[in-house]
Length: 423
Image 1: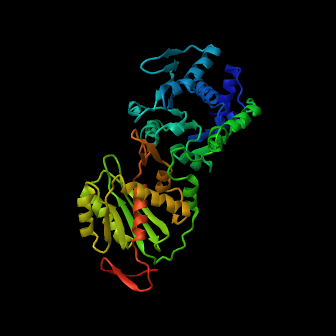
Image 2: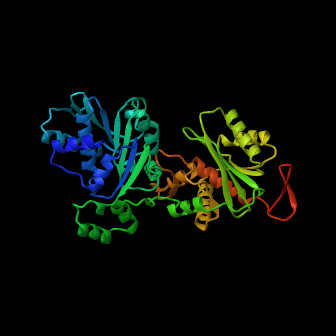
Image 3: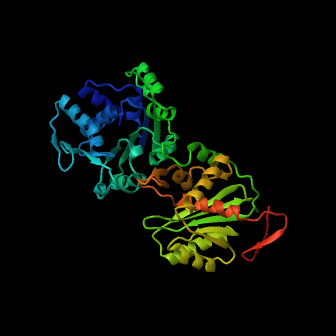
């Protein structure tokens, strides 16, 4: 919002923003992100900003979205109360979803529950996502963001950190502020109206990691994270040290319904894996996918690869072997026993610091969003979080497996008909 709109707000209501709220409200970036501690005051800031914009920009359409209807109604109800206090004539309907009309301006409250299907086809000038870290990544990228496209709208993301996800990704991007995106971190203590003693009592009652997220607005591991953030960040920061002529391996994960085919290429000495290329794609005929993977293997001189051979992967493996005769390709079948072992090997390599990843790449994001879950029968399973994908995680794990299969000696050897000097 603008300074003039904030001044207008102060003529409508007795509420006054504290310094942090004022800073965030006056940010003019197209996307603005606030990681907030509990009791910081994001609800009041969001509600008052929405109310002022509805008055100052006649015809503006604003949508408040949260993981559930109950959550989205918190900001909506607060905005309604502001208009009541300001004695503004408004019309409010509650079904099929909350909708407030002020002249030609509209504020609605919607749920992003599930796939966000009910949001598709909608548009808005401005969208506020509350508790954005609990909204599925694909709902944010594939459903909510396109709602702003035809109006060149603005997006506001608010919430408490909860692991690495799209909320985290945009927070990181916004740490270098620009007209396009800006992000802020507001711990609970930055609210001058909250008791410091209260916050300290919570510190003594909560695990450190949970307190850091809930009250200090610090991004950390979610409780069900398989790969610790510290290990992922270590892999991103680890410099490449292998020579350019080191052996090159790859991992290939074929797409399942709604997923992607992913390829991970890495240099290796048998112990260290340095990712030099990552790619994923979907919605292509199988023949084109094989050709595309084969081209990657050829371009990067891959001598050894591990490829998913489960289900449809079995015939694709044979097709790929024919298309990439210079690469020796191992088939890997996923079972209830083999997958945990593969993921455990990747987790161990990350913890030991023997993997390096492109900073800010797709693989890092998927690693951070890879979760463990206890089934009803008591077994522990690992998969991408709901709404996310794990294709590049699996491709990386397969590339790591491939790296362990590359011989290491001082002589010149041959793999797939290609002579190669191993390190």
